[in-house]
Amino acid sequence: MKSVLWQGGWATRLRIMSGLILFIFAFFHFINIGLGLFHTDYLHGMQKGRHVITRNNIGSAILYLALLVHFGLALYSLAQRRTMRMPFSLGLQVVLGFVIPLQLISHLVHTRYAHAVFGVNDEMGYIIALMWPSYAIWTQSLLLLVVWVHSCIGLHMWLRLTTWWQRTLPYLIGLAVFIPSFALAGLLTEGRRIWADFADPFLRDQYIEHYNWPSPEAFQALMGVRQDTLLAFGLAVGATLLVFLVRKILRRRHSVRIKYVEGPEIVAEKGMTLLEISQANGIPHTALCGGKGRCTTCRVIVENGADQLPVPSEIEARSLAAVKAPEGARLACQIRPTEPITAFRMYNPGSGRNRAHASQGQERKLAVLFLDMRGFTALTTGQLPYDIVFLLNRFFDAIVPAITSDGGVVDKYMGDGLLAVFETADAASSARAGMKAAANVSRALQRFNEQLETEGSPLIRIGMGLHLGDLVLGEIGAVGTASRTIIGDAVNVASRLEAETKGLGVELLVSGDLLKAAGHESWQNDLRPFQLRGVTRPISALPIERASDLSPKIAA
Image 1: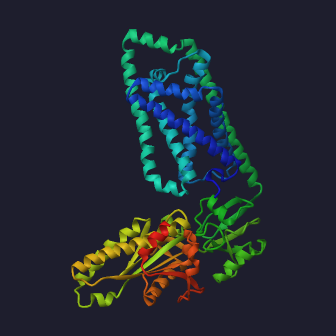
Image 2: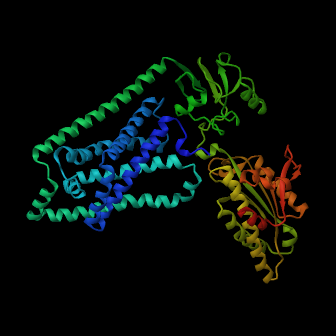
Image 3: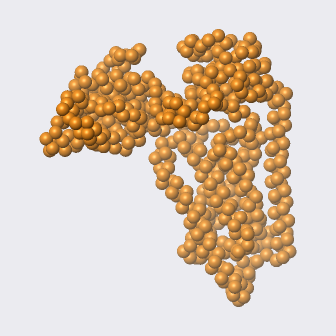
Protein backbone atom coordinates (compact mmCIF):
# COMPACT_ATOMS: atom_id res chain seq x y z
CA MET A 1 0.00 0.00 0.00
CA LYS A 2 1.28 3.43 -0.89
CA SER A 3 2.34 5.34 2.21
CA VAL A 4 0.08 8.21 3.22
CA LEU A 5 3.17 10.39 3.45
CA TRP A 6 3.76 10.21 -0.32
CA GLN A 7 0.22 10.73 -1.53
CA GLY A 8 -0.44 13.94 -3.47
CA GLY A 9 1.81 16.17 -5.56
CA TRP A 10 5.24 17.59 -4.78
CA ALA A 11 3.77 20.58 -2.93
CA THR A 12 1.71 18.32 -0.67
CA ARG A 13 4.72 16.13 0.09
CA LEU A 14 6.93 19.09 0.91
CA ARG A 15 4.23 20.64 3.07
CA ILE A 16 3.83 17.40 5.03
CA MET A 17 7.57 16.87 5.52
CA SER A 18 8.27 20.48 6.50
CA GLY A 19 5.24 20.48 8.79
CA LEU A 20 6.44 17.30 10.52
CA ILE A 21 9.86 18.83 11.16
CA LEU A 22 8.29 21.94 12.69
CA PHE A 23 5.81 19.85 14.70
CA ILE A 24 8.60 17.75 16.23
CA PHE A 25 10.52 20.92 17.12
CA ALA A 26 7.43 22.51 18.70
CA PHE A 27 6.58 19.32 20.62
CA PHE A 28 9.96 19.10 22.34
CA HIS A 29 10.09 22.88 22.81
CA PHE A 30 6.79 22.76 24.72
CA ILE A 31 7.94 19.79 26.79
CA ASN A 32 11.10 21.77 27.56
CA ILE A 33 9.07 24.74 28.85
CA GLY A 34 6.89 22.45 30.93
CA LEU A 35 9.91 21.13 32.85
CA GLY A 36 10.00 24.49 34.60
CA LEU A 37 7.13 23.06 36.65
CA PHE A 38 9.65 20.81 38.41
CA HIS A 39 13.08 22.48 38.53
CA THR A 40 15.14 25.09 36.67
CA ASP A 41 17.98 22.61 36.13
CA TYR A 42 15.64 20.31 34.18
CA LEU A 43 14.50 23.27 32.08
CA HIS A 44 18.01 24.37 31.11
CA GLY A 45 19.34 20.82 30.85
CA MET A 46 16.84 19.83 28.16
CA GLN A 47 17.38 23.14 26.33
CA LYS A 48 21.11 22.42 26.09
CA GLY A 49 20.34 18.98 24.74
CA ARG A 50 18.00 20.41 22.10
CA HIS A 51 20.58 23.02 21.09
CA VAL A 52 23.04 20.24 20.26
CA ILE A 53 20.68 19.36 17.40
CA THR A 54 19.08 22.69 16.48
CA ARG A 55 22.07 25.01 16.93
CA ASN A 56 24.57 23.18 14.72
CA ASN A 57 24.84 24.15 11.06
CA ILE A 58 22.97 21.13 9.68
CA GLY A 59 20.18 21.23 12.27
CA SER A 60 19.71 24.99 11.85
CA ALA A 61 19.62 24.69 8.06
CA ILE A 62 16.97 21.93 8.21
CA LEU A 63 14.84 23.78 10.74
CA TYR A 64 14.83 27.18 9.03
CA LEU A 65 14.47 25.65 5.57
CA ALA A 66 11.41 23.75 6.82
CA LEU A 67 10.00 27.00 8.22
CA LEU A 68 10.51 28.89 4.95
CA VAL A 69 9.23 26.03 2.80
CA HIS A 70 6.11 25.53 4.94
CA PHE A 71 5.26 29.23 4.92
CA GLY A 72 6.11 29.61 1.24
CA LEU A 73 3.87 26.67 0.27
CA ALA A 74 1.04 28.17 2.32
CA LEU A 75 1.34 31.38 0.30
CA TYR A 76 1.57 29.40 -2.95
CA SER A 77 -1.53 27.36 -2.05
CA LEU A 78 -3.44 30.54 -1.21
CA ALA A 79 -2.44 32.22 -4.47
CA GLN A 80 -3.51 29.18 -6.51
CA ARG A 81 -6.99 28.89 -4.98
CA ARG A 82 -10.01 29.58 -7.15
CA THR A 83 -12.09 30.74 -4.20
CA MET A 84 -11.63 31.62 -0.55
CA ARG A 85 -14.56 29.41 0.41
CA MET A 86 -13.28 26.42 2.37
CA PRO A 87 -14.32 24.08 5.21
CA PHE A 88 -14.19 25.59 8.70
CA SER A 89 -11.30 23.38 9.86
CA LEU A 90 -9.19 24.32 6.83
CA GLY A 91 -10.10 28.01 7.17
CA LEU A 92 -9.15 27.97 10.86
CA GLN A 93 -5.83 26.34 10.07
CA VAL A 94 -5.06 28.94 7.40
CA VAL A 95 -5.93 31.85 9.70
CA LEU A 96 -3.85 30.43 12.55
CA GLY A 97 -0.99 29.80 10.13
CA PHE A 98 -0.85 33.49 9.24
CA VAL A 99 -1.21 34.59 12.87
CA ILE A 100 1.85 32.57 13.93
CA PRO A 101 4.52 34.73 12.19
CA LEU A 102 3.20 37.89 13.85
CA GLN A 103 4.47 36.61 17.20
CA LEU A 104 7.11 34.15 16.04
CA ILE A 105 9.14 36.89 14.35
CA SER A 106 9.46 38.80 17.62
CA HIS A 107 10.44 35.60 19.43
CA LEU A 108 13.15 34.69 16.90
CA VAL A 109 14.59 38.21 16.75
CA HIS A 110 15.00 38.47 20.54
CA THR A 111 16.43 34.96 20.92
CA ARG A 112 18.29 33.42 17.97
CA TYR A 113 19.15 36.70 16.25
CA ALA A 114 20.14 38.38 19.55
CA HIS A 115 22.33 35.37 20.38
CA ALA A 116 24.05 35.37 16.99
CA VAL A 117 24.60 39.16 16.66
CA PHE A 118 24.90 40.47 20.24
CA GLY A 119 26.10 37.32 22.03
CA VAL A 120 23.02 37.10 24.26
CA ASN A 121 22.76 33.92 26.32
CA ASP A 122 19.20 33.07 25.29
CA GLU A 123 18.45 30.43 27.89
CA MET A 124 14.86 29.83 28.88
CA GLY A 125 15.39 32.02 31.92
CA TYR A 126 16.39 34.97 29.71
CA ILE A 127 13.35 34.49 27.46
CA ILE A 128 10.93 34.31 30.38
CA ALA A 129 12.56 37.24 32.22
CA LEU A 130 12.39 39.30 29.02
CA MET A 131 8.62 38.81 28.80
CA TRP A 132 7.61 38.78 32.46
CA PRO A 133 5.30 40.40 33.54
CA SER A 134 4.53 42.55 30.45
CA TYR A 135 1.86 41.86 27.82
CA ALA A 136 4.51 39.88 25.89
CA ILE A 137 3.98 36.90 28.19
CA TRP A 138 0.33 36.76 27.09
CA THR A 139 1.09 37.14 23.38
CA GLN A 140 3.78 34.43 23.53
CA SER A 141 1.44 32.15 25.50
CA LEU A 142 -1.13 32.74 22.77
CA LEU A 143 1.56 31.89 20.20
CA LEU A 144 2.13 28.57 21.96
CA LEU A 145 -1.58 27.70 21.75
CA VAL A 146 -1.93 28.88 18.16
CA VAL A 147 1.09 26.84 17.02
CA TRP A 148 -0.23 23.75 18.78
CA VAL A 149 -3.81 24.03 17.46
CA HIS A 150 -2.53 24.71 13.92
CA SER A 151 -0.23 21.68 14.13
CA CYS A 152 -2.90 19.36 15.53
CA ILE A 153 -5.38 20.31 12.80
CA GLY A 154 -2.76 19.65 10.13
CA LEU A 155 -1.79 16.31 11.67
CA HIS A 156 -5.44 15.24 11.91
CA MET A 157 -6.24 16.25 8.33
CA TRP A 158 -3.23 14.21 7.16
CA LEU A 159 -3.86 11.02 9.16
CA ARG A 160 -7.63 11.05 9.71
CA LEU A 161 -8.27 8.28 7.15
CA THR A 162 -5.78 5.79 8.64
CA THR A 163 -7.24 3.07 10.87
CA TRP A 164 -4.66 3.39 13.65
CA TRP A 165 -5.33 7.12 13.95
CA GLN A 166 -9.07 6.50 14.39
CA ARG A 167 -8.40 3.86 17.05
CA THR A 168 -6.02 6.02 19.08
CA LEU A 169 -7.80 9.37 18.55
CA PRO A 170 -9.39 9.53 22.05
CA TYR A 171 -5.96 9.11 23.66
CA LEU A 172 -4.32 11.55 21.25
CA ILE A 173 -6.93 14.19 22.11
CA GLY A 174 -5.96 13.83 25.76
CA LEU A 175 -2.28 14.22 24.84
CA ALA A 176 -3.09 17.24 22.67
CA VAL A 177 -4.77 18.94 25.66
CA PHE A 178 -2.00 17.94 28.08
CA ILE A 179 1.01 19.29 26.12
CA PRO A 180 0.07 23.03 26.01
CA SER A 181 -1.31 22.84 29.55
CA PHE A 182 1.97 21.36 30.76
CA ALA A 183 3.99 24.02 28.90
CA LEU A 184 1.90 26.91 30.26
CA ALA A 185 2.15 25.54 33.80
CA GLY A 186 5.95 25.37 33.48
CA LEU A 187 6.07 28.88 32.05
CA LEU A 188 3.99 30.25 34.92
CA THR A 189 6.06 28.48 37.59
CA GLU A 190 9.45 29.52 36.18
CA GLY A 191 8.25 33.08 35.50
CA ARG A 192 7.16 33.60 39.09
CA ARG A 193 10.47 32.22 40.38
CA ILE A 194 12.60 34.41 38.12
CA TRP A 195 10.54 37.50 38.85
CA ALA A 196 11.01 36.89 42.56
CA ASP A 197 14.78 36.67 42.00
CA PHE A 198 14.78 39.88 39.97
CA ALA A 199 13.26 41.68 42.94
CA ASP A 200 16.63 41.16 44.69
CA PRO A 201 19.10 43.75 43.23
CA PHE A 202 22.08 41.45 43.82
CA LEU A 203 20.47 38.49 42.03
CA ARG A 204 19.20 40.76 39.25
CA ASP A 205 22.74 41.97 38.52
CA GLN A 206 23.94 38.38 38.41
CA TYR A 207 21.20 37.43 35.98
CA ILE A 208 21.96 40.40 33.72
CA GLU A 209 25.65 39.48 33.64
CA HIS A 210 24.94 35.76 33.11
CA TYR A 211 22.56 36.40 30.20
CA ASN A 212 24.73 39.20 28.73
CA TRP A 213 21.57 41.30 28.76
CA PRO A 214 21.27 43.50 25.63
CA SER A 215 22.03 47.19 26.00
CA PRO A 216 19.40 49.83 25.16
CA GLU A 217 21.15 50.34 21.82
CA ALA A 218 21.01 46.60 21.15
CA PHE A 219 17.31 46.53 22.03
CA GLN A 220 16.72 49.41 19.64
CA ALA A 221 18.50 47.50 16.87
CA LEU A 222 16.47 44.36 17.62
CA MET A 223 13.22 46.33 17.42
CA GLY A 224 14.32 47.68 14.04
CA VAL A 225 15.01 44.17 12.73
CA ARG A 226 11.62 43.04 14.07
CA GLN A 227 9.81 45.87 12.28
CA ASP A 228 11.64 45.19 9.01
CA THR A 229 10.85 41.46 9.19
CA LEU A 230 7.18 42.12 9.93
CA LEU A 231 7.09 44.49 6.97
CA ALA A 232 8.57 41.78 4.73
CA PHE A 233 5.96 39.33 6.03
CA GLY A 234 3.17 41.81 5.29
CA LEU A 235 4.49 42.41 1.78
CA ALA A 236 4.64 38.65 1.12
CA VAL A 237 1.04 38.17 2.24
CA GLY A 238 -0.06 41.24 0.27
CA ALA A 239 1.69 39.99 -2.87
CA THR A 240 -0.04 36.61 -2.45
CA LEU A 241 -3.47 38.21 -2.19
CA LEU A 242 -2.66 40.38 -5.21
CA VAL A 243 -1.77 37.30 -7.26
CA PHE A 244 -5.03 35.67 -6.15
CA LEU A 245 -7.08 38.71 -7.20
CA VAL A 246 -5.28 39.07 -10.55
CA ARG A 247 -5.85 35.39 -11.33
CA LYS A 248 -9.51 35.76 -10.37
CA ILE A 249 -9.92 38.78 -12.67
CA LEU A 250 -8.21 36.97 -15.54
CA ARG A 251 -10.41 33.93 -15.04
CA ARG A 252 -13.51 36.11 -15.18
CA ARG A 253 -12.47 37.13 -18.70
CA HIS A 254 -12.91 33.45 -19.55
CA SER A 255 -16.10 32.98 -17.59
CA VAL A 256 -19.62 31.76 -18.18
CA ARG A 257 -22.95 32.94 -16.75
CA ILE A 258 -25.04 30.36 -14.89
CA LYS A 259 -28.64 31.01 -13.85
CA TYR A 260 -30.26 28.68 -11.33
CA VAL A 261 -34.04 28.35 -11.34
CA GLU A 262 -35.19 29.21 -7.78
CA GLY A 263 -31.64 30.33 -7.11
CA PRO A 264 -29.02 32.97 -7.88
CA GLU A 265 -27.38 33.98 -11.13
CA ILE A 266 -23.58 33.79 -11.04
CA VAL A 267 -20.52 34.19 -13.23
CA ALA A 268 -18.15 31.22 -13.05
CA GLU A 269 -14.92 30.11 -14.62
CA LYS A 270 -15.04 27.98 -17.75
CA GLY A 271 -13.65 24.47 -17.46
CA MET A 272 -15.38 23.58 -14.21
CA THR A 273 -18.29 21.15 -14.02
CA LEU A 274 -21.64 22.62 -13.03
CA LEU A 275 -21.41 20.77 -9.69
CA GLU A 276 -17.96 22.29 -9.02
CA ILE A 277 -19.38 25.72 -9.90
CA SER A 278 -22.20 25.22 -7.39
CA GLN A 279 -19.84 24.08 -4.66
CA ALA A 280 -17.33 26.88 -5.30
CA ASN A 281 -20.08 29.50 -5.00
CA GLY A 282 -21.79 28.06 -1.94
CA ILE A 283 -24.93 27.05 -3.85
CA PRO A 284 -26.66 23.97 -2.35
CA HIS A 285 -26.42 21.11 -4.81
CA THR A 286 -27.05 17.50 -3.78
CA ALA A 287 -24.41 14.94 -4.86
CA LEU A 288 -24.42 11.72 -2.85
CA CYS A 289 -21.67 9.95 -4.80
CA GLY A 290 -19.33 12.96 -4.66
CA GLY A 291 -19.49 13.76 -8.38
CA LYS A 292 -18.70 10.33 -9.85
CA GLY A 293 -21.74 10.19 -12.13
CA ARG A 294 -23.26 7.22 -10.29
CA CYS A 295 -26.04 8.45 -7.99
CA THR A 296 -27.69 10.98 -10.38
CA THR A 297 -28.82 13.12 -7.42
CA CYS A 298 -26.97 16.11 -8.88
CA ARG A 299 -29.02 16.03 -12.07
CA VAL A 300 -30.51 19.21 -13.50
CA ILE A 301 -32.95 20.18 -16.21
CA VAL A 302 -31.16 22.56 -18.58
CA GLU A 303 -33.95 24.93 -19.60
CA ASN A 304 -31.81 27.24 -21.77
CA GLY A 305 -28.51 26.53 -23.46
CA ALA A 306 -28.81 22.74 -23.63
CA ASP A 307 -27.93 22.80 -27.34
CA GLN A 308 -24.55 24.38 -26.47
CA LEU A 309 -23.52 21.46 -24.26
CA PRO A 310 -21.65 18.42 -25.58
CA VAL A 311 -23.63 15.19 -25.90
CA PRO A 312 -23.65 12.99 -22.75
CA SER A 313 -20.73 10.63 -22.31
CA GLU A 314 -21.31 6.89 -22.01
CA ILE A 315 -21.25 7.08 -18.19
CA GLU A 316 -23.70 9.98 -18.08
CA ALA A 317 -26.04 8.49 -20.67
CA ARG A 318 -26.17 5.14 -18.84
CA SER A 319 -26.89 6.82 -15.46
CA LEU A 320 -29.64 9.01 -16.95
CA ALA A 321 -31.22 6.03 -18.67
CA ALA A 322 -31.22 4.03 -15.42
CA VAL A 323 -33.42 6.63 -13.70
CA LYS A 324 -35.52 7.29 -16.82
CA ALA A 325 -34.54 10.95 -16.74
CA PRO A 326 -36.75 13.30 -18.78
CA GLU A 327 -35.62 15.21 -21.85
CA GLY A 328 -33.19 18.01 -21.04
CA ALA A 329 -31.87 16.28 -17.91
CA ARG A 330 -28.10 16.28 -17.41
CA LEU A 331 -25.72 15.37 -14.60
CA ALA A 332 -24.18 18.48 -13.06
CA CYS A 333 -21.01 16.56 -12.25
CA GLN A 334 -20.47 15.69 -15.93
CA ILE A 335 -21.27 18.87 -17.87
CA ARG A 336 -18.81 21.75 -18.27
CA PRO A 337 -20.69 24.84 -19.49
CA THR A 338 -18.90 27.11 -21.92
CA GLU A 339 -21.97 29.18 -22.85
CA PRO A 340 -24.70 30.71 -20.63
CA ILE A 341 -27.24 28.18 -19.34
CA THR A 342 -30.31 28.13 -17.10
CA ALA A 343 -30.48 25.04 -14.87
CA PHE A 344 -33.13 23.66 -12.53
CA ARG A 345 -31.78 21.48 -9.70
CA MET A 346 -34.07 18.44 -9.40
CA TYR A 347 -32.85 17.75 -5.84
CA ASN A 348 -32.39 21.12 -4.19
CA PRO A 349 -31.42 20.69 -0.50
CA GLY A 350 -32.09 24.37 0.15
CA SER A 351 -35.62 24.68 -1.22
CA GLY A 352 -37.50 25.67 1.92
CA ARG A 353 -36.36 22.68 3.94
CA ASN A 354 -34.45 23.04 7.18
CA ARG A 355 -32.18 20.04 6.77
CA ALA A 356 -28.85 19.14 8.35
CA HIS A 357 -25.96 18.19 6.11
CA ALA A 358 -26.43 14.53 7.05
CA SER A 359 -29.80 14.50 5.29
CA GLN A 360 -28.01 14.67 1.93
CA GLY A 361 -26.52 11.24 2.54
CA GLN A 362 -23.15 9.60 2.12
CA GLU A 363 -22.25 6.59 -0.01
CA ARG A 364 -20.04 3.97 1.69
CA LYS A 365 -19.09 0.31 1.20
CA LEU A 366 -19.77 -1.22 4.63
CA ALA A 367 -20.70 -4.46 6.36
CA VAL A 368 -24.29 -4.93 7.54
CA LEU A 369 -25.61 -7.58 9.92
CA PHE A 370 -29.26 -8.68 9.88
CA LEU A 371 -30.28 -10.69 12.97
CA ASP A 372 -33.58 -12.32 13.82
CA MET A 373 -34.84 -14.48 16.70
CA ARG A 374 -36.09 -17.95 15.67
CA GLY A 375 -39.54 -19.16 16.71
CA PHE A 376 -40.47 -15.94 18.46
CA THR A 377 -44.23 -16.51 18.10
CA ALA A 378 -44.11 -20.01 19.61
CA LEU A 379 -41.71 -18.81 22.28
CA THR A 380 -44.03 -16.04 23.50
CA THR A 381 -47.44 -17.70 23.04
CA GLY A 382 -49.53 -17.29 26.17
CA GLN A 383 -47.23 -14.70 27.72
CA LEU A 384 -48.38 -11.29 28.86
CA PRO A 385 -47.24 -8.27 26.81
CA TYR A 386 -45.07 -7.14 29.73
CA ASP A 387 -43.27 -10.50 29.78
CA ILE A 388 -42.67 -10.37 26.03
CA VAL A 389 -41.14 -6.88 26.20
CA PHE A 390 -39.07 -7.91 29.21
CA LEU A 391 -37.69 -10.97 27.36
CA LEU A 392 -36.83 -8.93 24.26
CA ASN A 393 -35.02 -6.29 26.28
CA ARG A 394 -33.04 -8.96 28.15
CA PHE A 395 -32.15 -10.57 24.82
CA PHE A 396 -30.95 -7.31 23.28
CA ASP A 397 -29.08 -6.37 26.47
CA ALA A 398 -27.20 -9.64 26.12
CA ILE A 399 -26.21 -9.47 22.44
CA VAL A 400 -26.02 -5.79 21.45
CA PRO A 401 -22.80 -5.06 23.43
CA ALA A 402 -21.13 -7.73 21.28
CA ILE A 403 -21.99 -5.60 18.22
CA THR A 404 -21.15 -2.16 19.59
CA SER A 405 -17.83 -3.30 21.10
CA ASP A 406 -16.52 -3.94 17.58
CA GLY A 407 -17.57 -0.60 16.13
CA GLY A 408 -21.07 -1.62 15.11
CA VAL A 409 -24.15 0.55 15.42
CA VAL A 410 -27.69 -0.81 15.62
CA ASP A 411 -29.47 1.04 12.83
CA LYS A 412 -32.95 -0.15 13.81
CA TYR A 413 -34.79 -2.71 15.92
CA MET A 414 -37.53 -4.68 14.17
CA GLY A 415 -39.57 -6.52 16.78
CA ASP A 416 -37.46 -9.60 17.58
CA GLY A 417 -34.62 -8.64 15.24
CA LEU A 418 -32.21 -5.87 14.39
CA LEU A 419 -30.12 -4.35 11.62
CA ALA A 420 -26.56 -3.24 12.43
CA VAL A 421 -23.93 -1.46 10.34
CA PHE A 422 -20.17 -1.33 10.90
CA GLU A 423 -19.12 2.19 9.95
CA THR A 424 -15.32 1.95 10.11
CA ALA A 425 -12.59 3.64 8.09
CA ASP A 426 -12.72 1.31 5.06
CA ALA A 427 -14.45 -1.75 3.64
CA ALA A 428 -11.79 -4.21 4.85
CA SER A 429 -11.94 -3.11 8.49
CA SER A 430 -15.75 -3.01 8.32
CA ALA A 431 -15.84 -6.61 7.04
CA ARG A 432 -13.49 -7.81 9.78
CA ALA A 433 -15.51 -5.97 12.45
CA GLY A 434 -18.71 -7.59 11.18
CA MET A 435 -17.26 -11.10 11.35
CA LYS A 436 -15.89 -10.54 14.84
CA ALA A 437 -19.22 -9.13 16.01
CA ALA A 438 -21.15 -12.12 14.63
CA ALA A 439 -18.86 -14.51 16.53
CA ASN A 440 -19.22 -12.47 19.72
CA VAL A 441 -23.01 -12.36 19.37
CA SER A 442 -23.06 -16.15 19.18
CA ARG A 443 -20.96 -16.49 22.34
CA ALA A 444 -23.11 -13.90 24.13
CA LEU A 445 -26.23 -15.85 23.15
CA GLN A 446 -24.73 -19.06 24.55
CA ARG A 447 -24.13 -17.36 27.90
CA PHE A 448 -27.67 -15.93 27.85
CA ASN A 449 -29.14 -19.36 27.10
CA GLU A 450 -27.24 -20.86 30.02
CA GLN A 451 -28.92 -18.29 32.25
CA LEU A 452 -32.35 -19.05 30.75
CA GLU A 453 -31.77 -22.77 31.30
CA THR A 454 -31.17 -22.24 35.00
CA GLU A 455 -34.47 -20.34 35.12
CA GLY A 456 -36.32 -23.16 33.36
CA SER A 457 -37.13 -20.90 30.37
CA PRO A 458 -37.04 -21.99 26.71
CA LEU A 459 -33.70 -21.41 24.92
CA ILE A 460 -33.39 -18.82 22.14
CA ARG A 461 -32.04 -19.46 18.67
CA ILE A 462 -31.10 -16.83 16.10
CA GLY A 463 -30.27 -16.45 12.43
CA MET A 464 -27.84 -13.88 11.04
CA GLY A 465 -27.04 -12.62 7.56
CA LEU A 466 -23.74 -10.75 7.06
CA HIS A 467 -22.95 -8.93 3.82
CA LEU A 468 -20.71 -6.16 2.51
CA GLY A 469 -21.94 -3.73 -0.13
CA ASP A 470 -22.69 -0.17 -1.15
CA LEU A 471 -24.92 1.77 1.23
CA VAL A 472 -26.29 5.27 1.47
CA LEU A 473 -26.23 6.71 4.99
CA GLY A 474 -28.39 9.73 5.68
CA GLU A 475 -31.31 11.26 7.53
CA ILE A 476 -34.59 9.98 6.12
CA GLY A 477 -38.01 11.28 7.11
CA ALA A 478 -40.02 14.45 7.37
CA VAL A 479 -38.29 17.63 8.52
CA GLY A 480 -37.85 17.65 12.29
CA THR A 481 -38.54 13.92 12.67
CA ALA A 482 -35.91 12.44 10.34
CA SER A 483 -33.57 9.84 11.80
CA ARG A 484 -30.23 8.63 10.50
CA THR A 485 -30.52 5.28 8.74
CA ILE A 486 -29.09 3.20 5.90
CA ILE A 487 -30.57 2.11 2.60
CA GLY A 488 -29.25 0.11 -0.33
CA ASP A 489 -29.12 -3.34 -1.91
CA ALA A 490 -26.67 -4.52 0.77
CA VAL A 491 -29.42 -4.29 3.39
CA ASN A 492 -31.76 -6.42 1.26
CA VAL A 493 -29.04 -9.02 0.65
CA ALA A 494 -28.23 -9.30 4.37
CA SER A 495 -31.94 -9.70 5.15
CA ARG A 496 -32.39 -12.43 2.52
CA LEU A 497 -29.29 -14.27 3.74
CA GLU A 498 -30.68 -14.26 7.27
CA ALA A 499 -33.95 -15.75 5.97
CA GLU A 500 -31.99 -18.58 4.28
CA THR A 501 -30.39 -19.62 7.58
CA LYS A 502 -33.75 -20.96 8.81
CA GLY A 503 -34.05 -23.59 6.07
CA LEU A 504 -30.38 -24.54 6.34
CA GLY A 505 -30.49 -24.85 10.12
CA VAL A 506 -27.41 -22.68 10.56
CA GLU A 507 -26.80 -19.63 12.68
CA LEU A 508 -24.97 -17.49 10.13
CA LEU A 509 -24.57 -16.92 6.40
CA VAL A 510 -21.57 -14.78 5.39
CA SER A 511 -21.43 -13.46 1.83
CA GLY A 512 -18.41 -14.14 -0.35
CA ASP A 513 -18.04 -10.38 -0.95
CA LEU A 514 -17.51 -9.81 2.77
CA LEU A 515 -15.09 -12.73 3.16
CA LYS A 516 -13.00 -11.44 0.27
CA ALA A 517 -12.86 -7.92 1.71
CA ALA A 518 -11.89 -9.32 5.13
CA GLY A 519 -8.97 -11.23 3.59
CA HIS A 520 -10.42 -14.75 3.97
CA GLU A 521 -10.33 -15.84 0.33
CA SER A 522 -9.18 -19.33 1.39
CA TRP A 523 -12.83 -20.08 2.24
CA GLN A 524 -14.02 -19.40 -1.32
CA ASN A 525 -14.16 -23.14 -2.12
CA ASP A 526 -16.72 -23.64 0.67
CA LEU A 527 -19.14 -21.02 -0.65
CA ARG A 528 -22.61 -21.94 -1.83
CA PRO A 529 -24.63 -20.00 -4.43
CA PHE A 530 -28.00 -18.53 -3.40
CA GLN A 531 -30.67 -17.03 -5.63
CA LEU A 532 -32.23 -14.57 -3.21
CA ARG A 533 -35.67 -13.09 -3.66
CA GLY A 534 -35.48 -9.49 -4.89
CA VAL A 535 -31.75 -9.78 -5.71
CA THR A 536 -30.90 -9.80 -9.41
CA ARG A 537 -27.60 -11.69 -9.23
CA PRO A 538 -26.73 -14.97 -7.44
CA ILE A 539 -25.03 -14.40 -4.10
CA SER A 540 -22.32 -16.77 -2.88
CA ALA A 541 -22.26 -17.25 0.89
CA LEU A 542 -20.62 -19.43 3.53
CA PRO A 543 -22.97 -21.28 5.94
CA ILE A 544 -21.71 -21.32 9.55
CA GLU A 545 -23.55 -23.67 11.91
CA ARG A 546 -22.33 -21.78 15.00
CA ALA A 547 -21.08 -18.24 14.46
CA SER A 548 -18.84 -18.60 17.52
CA ASP A 549 -16.81 -21.11 15.46
CA LEU A 550 -15.55 -18.14 13.44
CA SER A 551 -13.36 -16.88 16.29
CA PRO A 552 -10.40 -19.31 15.90
CA LYS A 553 -10.59 -19.03 12.11
CA ILE A 554 -10.54 -15.23 12.27
CA ALA A 555 -7.60 -15.31 14.66
CA ALA A 556 -5.73 -17.71 12.36
